[in-house]
Image (cartoon, rainbow, N blue to C red; front, top):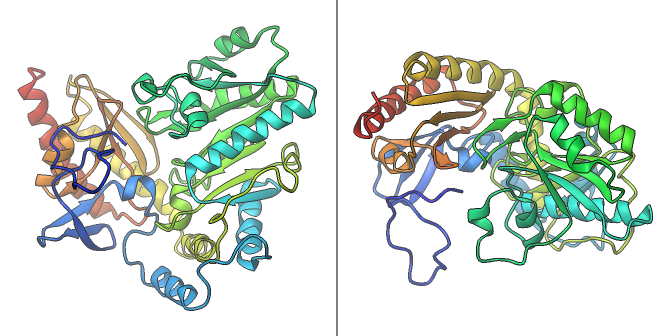
Length: 404
């Protein structure tokens, strides 16, 4: 999460790890939230691509209340039927075979990195190496931070973990060159659409080429769908636009509509790498989180939210293009479905605070990219409202910075 420039003082009792905007949200309904002072906001951030069903969705609220009255947490010492139910659904949607549940995207990516290393050791490779990407973001643990491609978030936490080879996105020649003659490579790991790195999509042709290369060289293809998965792009998982299937797929964010849920979905090549005792979690797969995942997917299917996200996302993109696309200060408008980025030619972090003042929640990432990842229930009218609020703010900022 990028820190806005206009922030309120941190609580004296909370570590100052976030640059917060000067509001506290109280409650929400649909795509709207209200702060403790009663001011309303249109939510185009969705908790950073988390609140799939928006706020206060009646069917989700009812299901979660029911589950809280039954069981919130037990332990993975015991079978948890809702785990089996959610795992079966994810297997069906992905075309893969097995699932490990955790609580966050970081944990899911950490598990993927462990899978890749053990895959290598099982092949007799003592020092496995994993291909990762420029501008990637996979989390803030030491391992996921090392896989991340942002020197600013890595600074101060060196030495980073070894065993990563970094390449640019959408360049198969660069990937082949970086790995040529290296017998220690075990996996290629990337986001189908980079989120924190600036909403940068992987090309469908590139995805197919990497899938082919992994097959040829017996590498794991590991696709981080933490932010771009769960229907956000108009398919369940963003890589499905390229008609490929990965070997390992971390998930989180939108899977539980706000309840912390993470998962690693594995295909046959990776499904049996972990054995008993190789990996674990206390909270992962608890009954409340599993119920949230089961009900999120059920509601998405019943309400046709994949098709809705694709349709409204295209409407939102077209409206942004119409209002901002011809401005010389707008470098690009890109993304898929309801994961869109508007890249400016100048830094624009102050837009977060200005949007809040205007009643809109957004984020700015990679310094110059406005990121829009609203709930998947966003309507076309609400998409038009997003643009009506945002476009004048962008034009005013660019004018201030001498870009006209």
